[in-house]
Image 1: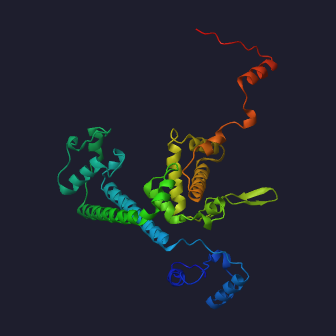
Image 2: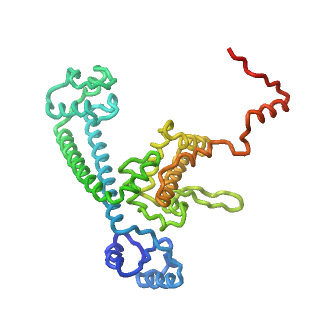
Image 3: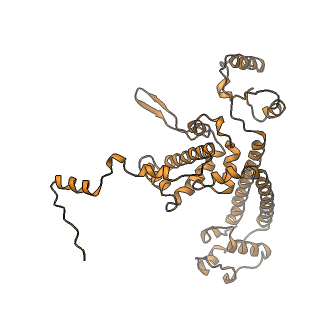
Length: 353
């Protein structure tokens, strides 16, 4: 069966328990261009399947699919909230209120209090901002007064109220959804604890990874197959000694951004995970920040694959060995002294003070 949008899901749900279904990506089963109809397409797919030329796509079990649907909906709610924040900031900008110039977070405690005061008292001009100051605020009173020296019309004020109400309802929906996600993912608690031992991965990130790849790693022959499925494998397009492109594919629309975020978090924890930081720095010097980040994301996914397959926690020593010199380059103190003497150096014992 060829996968097209969401139309394959009802058929798959009915036939899943009674027969073995091969769901194929359209890219791999499309017929020759021209004279293409639905009947001819179905006949073509049946013909190439008869010759074992159709590669089935990875479809996780039903409970994992339900968890995946919930996690992806949470991601959508986060995007909706971000869009509403941008629209709220646009209302302030067109009203000559530049809170983003003095506040790192326009929706923080101090900035929210100022915005609420402006909406509750549209005709009153703010003359004293000392009541709105918080402990970590670095901007002076003069800078804040200059930032709020604007005038919001009635239409923009009402629009901002609607946006803030929608943001509150989105936050409530997200809280309820997270409770449902945690209850659904409770059966995978041992696997989640394993995944959370990897650098840069917290609770909801681990749940999102499990919802995308599942817990049974036998469906992927090797970790390279999993990385290719997630869109983290560079292309190998070379002809006549020239590399055409090394771009990664567009696969993994949900798991790839998530792993990139985890990779960035792991790189920042250089004291806790020096093996990740050192590998990132080595790659960044040669290939740049973006390609180094993708390489770290693939490294994390490979580690997760082996952790779930072997049922073992993350072991940083496996990666720290790469920073150490090879075994044949390890020498004792006597051998080092002999090498220096052979090079013409005079080796003396250190004087004790």
